[in-house]
Image 1 (cartoon, one colour):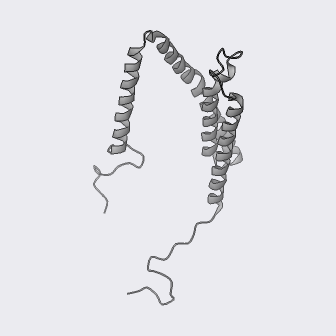
Image 2 (tube, helix red, strand yellow):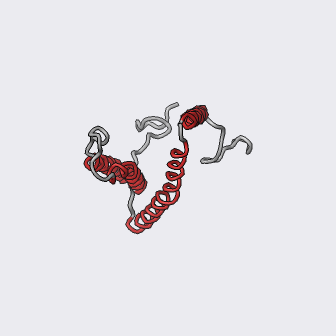
Image 3 (cartoon, helix red, strand yellow):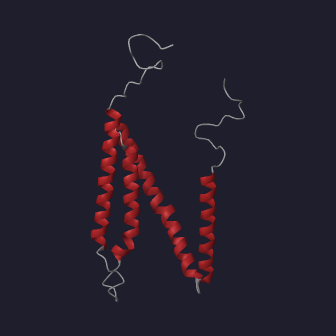
Length: 170
């Protein structure tokens, strides 16, 4: 028998909110409050607000359209070439793009800093190492996905118990 219609939940639909989601929401609100307090403690919060507005414009005007376009191109290529691990490739491209955007200000900073401790690391090399780690991880995950997709499913045991040749147990 099926449950009454009021009790059935759609597979991906909105059901009751789990305690973990409530906890994460409360933690997010707490962090927003901490950020607001730190912003209020700034002597000149205008610079921070300009930076936040710039980050929002760059995200919505540059990053989101680039990710959308790359996703559309990848979906078209996946349909044409039957790429089985396109989700892994999408994740790797998004991660690589985010890493590059985070590192971009350090890479484009002109000249040498006045203090040697201001930019003490070789950022171009470290970005390449991080991108290589993303690529290797994505390749490993994609290989596992392709391999598990090709493997035929294991036969399951019959519902009556192990096969003994004597028929079902009673």
